Image (cartoon, rainbow, N blue to C red; front, side, top):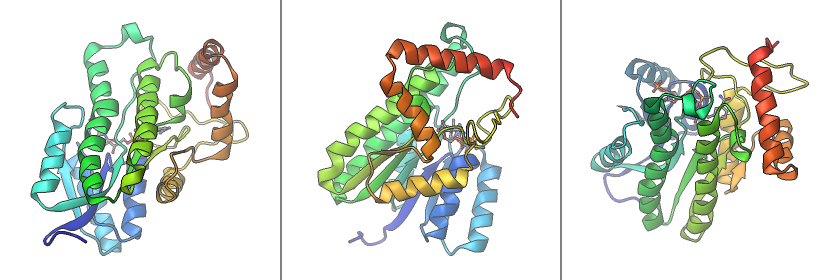
Amino acid sequence: MLKSGMTEYTLITGATSGIGRAFAVEFAKRGHNLVLASRNAARMSAVQKTLRQKYKVKIVCVKTDLSRPQAPEELYTFCTQNAYLVQTLINNAGCGLKTKIQVDQNPRDIEQLFQLNCGAVLKLSTLFGKAMQKRRSGHILNVASTAAFQPMPYAALYGASKAFVLSLSEAMHIELQDYGVSVTAVCPGITDTNFFQHGKPTVPGWLYKLLPPELVARRAIRAMYKNKIYVIPYFQHWLIAQLGRFLTRNAAAGVMRRVAQMRQKIRFL
Ligand SMILES: NC(=O)c1ccc[n+]([C@@H]2O[C@H](COP(=O)([O-])OP(=O)(O)OC[C@H]3O[C@@H](n4cnc5c(N)ncnc54)[C@H](OP(=O)(O)O)[C@@H]3O)[C@@H](O)[C@H]2O)c1
């Protein structure tokens, strides 16, 4: 039962492009009211306009940079003060760094990635998760990656940040399951989005399927409603992720090093 004046919303971080935008479309189709939180107000308005034309849902846009440490709490306060009851939280916003060895990364870039990929996910899951626990209902869906399953030389912090998201989600899944709150991590393989600012890796389909973001969003939502602990949204990617389980950590890191080196050389088809 909702408190009077409260309306249910799905909060999606990073909904202006790629997987987050696909989540916004899928939830709007299902009749969910949306709170979208990203940095680019114009792109958020464009998503809002498109979805409002097609679906009868309320859409609120919050311009925020979630790599600022105080941003998640501000977002939580904004939703609470406006009586937006966040019944579903999609922690999607995330970024990578230029392919380099970790010690050569810019310290400011490191801090921003850490805050966005880990800090914001942690704070939003904790704040909204607490409110969901009290209501004994709600869903949290965190976007990790297949990068979470093995060390990622030349993308060390990105891999570590997604391992953090996966581990946090799995533990919270167990902790909150007795309170009627589902927590699911979605671990996509390479997906066709703006994520790769320095040239999209397009690989032959038989070797590696580049996923459409719509497929990732649909399969992630299905897993969330089935209360799965995690999901890898494509069988071929699931199979590749399993390799990490059979190799030693050292061997898995070595394979990923080779992959990273090949990606620098190969002109992907
Ligand atoms: N693409 C892949 O191959 C792949 C694979 C596995 C996992 N993922 C994960 O999927 C998630 C979505 O990425 P994507 O592939 O859809 O990339 P994308 O198209 O670049 O989308 C990233 C989204 O995050 C938002 N964002 C970025 N920095 C932000 C910040 N500081 N504060 C608030 N919002 C921010 C962006 O919006 P604004 O620019 O408007 O802020 C954008 O909406 C990420 O967590 C990524 O790690 C991607």
